[in-house]
Amino acid sequence: MKDKFAVIGGSGAYNLLKGEGFGVDLECSKIFTPFGESAPIHRFRDKDLSFIFISRHGENGYEISAPFVNYRANIWALKECGVERIISWSGPGAINQKYSVGDFVIPHDIIDETRGREYTFFNGTGIGFIRQSHPFCTEIRDALSKALKETKGNYHNEGVYVCTQGPRLETGAEIRKYKLSGGDLVGMTLVPEAFLARELEMCYASVCYLTNYAEGVENRSYEEGELFEGMQNKGERERVDKIMLKFPEIIKAALKELLQMDRGCPCKNAMERYKRRGDISDDWRTWIRS
Image (tube, rainbow, N blue to C red; front, side):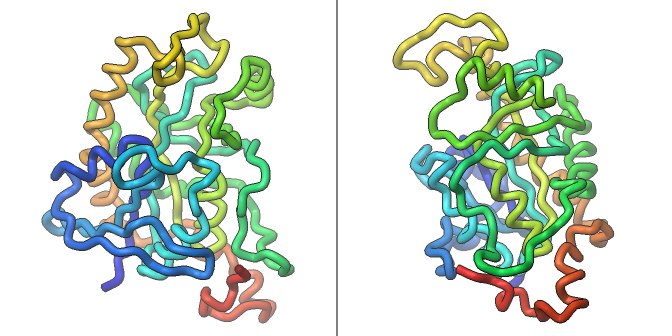
């Protein structure tokens, strides 16, 4: 059975998997890819909606931090399942002070500050020279915007996502640099996910929930033994826990919106130039270099 939609869950996905918010978990399996084993693939059904779900960081807790996620295996596995559109979520920190902890942001652009990640399927080839005017699919972003409007929560339709290497958090000087570069929020997971999806002509966009203010944005004292070591206070923590519960509602509303739309974006033709030149065939599996 082929599924056209997929959700890549970020932090907290492992908790939501235990509930029934996403519907009925029909089956769970792993796929063996040229890049190793994928994360477990869940197939959910909720009334007339069906989709695949991957928990990026693990099934039972935060088991795999961002630099060590097997992004290529996960994206390859989703393509193998027939996925055309991917919605992900991420929990970054806020650089831009117009944002508040607990707000949602639909990023529209990326600054890549990662180092050494496996970020392409086309190692050692002459293909993959792809324009990134819209690194996030505009159709999925529009669907997410409509879904967030229905929830009546605070959200922002645009934001520049700075993706850092991790697993450490950023220094104050780094955050000041990212702010000067136009960064609005900082996280660790959307690169290379977004770029890999584009290489395989899949639509991809993300909805972010702001978990904390980035280092130095607000003056916060150090608290040992706590998540973010004092960069998130008790009220903010409670706010974040509350909005996390909205993800099933938001994701399903966006998927239902997309269900009514044919793909009209450029994502589905990202490799068209190479097909016309005869460099690659229509069989995407033959494009891959592991």
